[in-house]
Image (cartoon, rainbow, N blue to C red; front, side, top):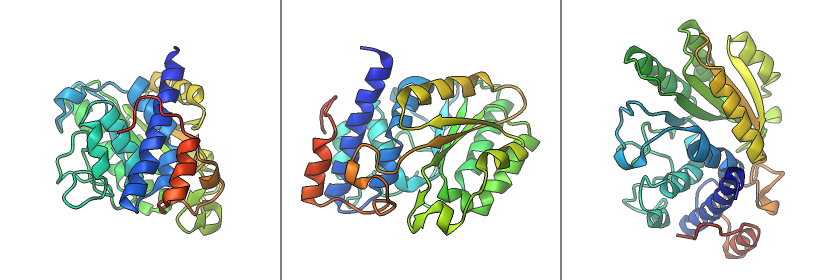
Amino acid sequence: MSNTQQLENLASQIRRDIVRMVHSASSGHPGGSLGCADFFSALYGSVMRFDASNFDMDAKGEDVFFLSNGHISPVWYSTLARHGYFPVSELGTFRQIDTRLQGHPTTAEHLPGIRMASGSLGQGLSVAIGAALAKRINGDDGIVYTLHGDGELQEGQIWEAAMSAPHHKIDNLIATVDYNNRQIDGDVSDVLSLGDLNAKWVAFGWIVLESEGNNMQSVVDTFAKAKSLLGQGKPVVVLMKTEMGAGVDFMMGTHKWHGVAPNDEQLARALEQLEETVGDY
């Protein structure tokens, strides 16, 4: 079995975890989580260097990831569990009372793999820049990764950070934008158009790559290229085109599954479309 096929198999299992977690909690954000399953499978299965068995906040000698659009926590929790950060069975506690798996990731719960709280949008790039600077000061060759929603780019803090990174010649940072053109109130282009995102990031001094986020080979190849472009005095951003709800036909093509849990019948329909490849929790 090829590595790409293994990553695709894991992405299918992550999608099963997502719909089951959100259904069980009767709340959560399945749409963006499903759309980013391929990215997370590739990031943790092929791209990043990390040690799940010895997690600490400093991450010396490791790559680190910050989820800025924290509402898509189901896809991250599933990925972390499937890579050994905590027991897979704990996914069944998602959004329950006293769980470590809060609806938006928190550091107060001390869940391995989580290094910042991200309930409020717009902050992740600033945190990532701080972590990248710290690694540079400490002589640490680890890479910092971060993910943002395209609707999140309507937050002003994102663009303050986007100016800051090239100014400080941050070149150990790869930011990714989940470019699905959906947000909670509708299409991003209708709510507040982002215009030519590629041109904007270039104008702000970033190296810009584009990727098909629901094509595993495209994701793997794009991040291999992104890593090869580091160390040149500029940060890298990947504009990753995805489909909200990817993998579940009735959740695709609409913003309506941004933050809605499937009922019993809808869960069954979703699971029929998603292969169980590693084993359900």
